[in-house]
Length: 279
Image 1 (tube, rainbow, N blue to C red):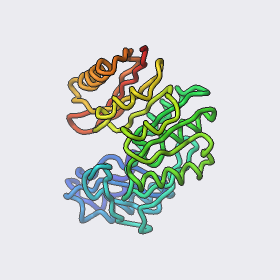
Image 2 (cartoon, rainbow, N blue to C red):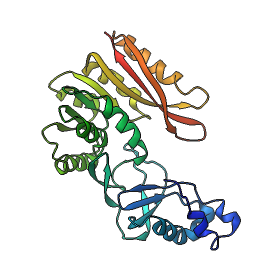
Image 3 (cartoon, rainbow, N blue to C red):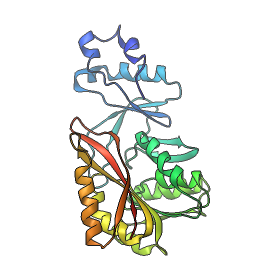
């Protein structure tokens, strides 16, 4: 979400050079706003939080990011700086309600467009495997868009897995979304059938699981493979990884789409390669 009038609200309270260090956007996840507060304006974080709440009447809590992504599950912790002292909320996307604790699970509302894009491609009768399913956003949005589908959602983080199971029940989707706990390398062995589509939304490690995706995908299946790439040549490394994995597993493929999902850092983009297995 763009700040809009935030700097106007703060203009009389912060010095001009301090306003330059107020970041340009923040995330709203349910009733919680999450903002990056730079060191230069940390002493004014209360004023920044008050301004955010004034601009967003539905926000009940404002949190500041408390560090970088940490650990195996890439959780980026937050700390409450204003409002109700909680990191739990209910987020609504594409008609799906999802409970989440921001200090226990990785979740990004910025991928909502991407989740919707994939959901629109799914056809009735498909079997879908979602790797690294987290609290369930891809699986649930797909199942909402196409009720006549079976989705196998795999997640290693036990806390995120518990929230996913809760969210499946919350959205009355236990007849078509089936959470599977464990590492995707081994979880795919629990699938009762081959699938028509694999979603791999873990750009920093998805390359390690291409063999597992290819093993569970039937001929004609679509794979949505996410990766990071330098802004100067964002697709080269990702395409090379797909090519090597397919050659190793004796699978032929065709790239149907490649696109930048979002800028990730000043030097990197997050990208997605949509490829179809033709053998």
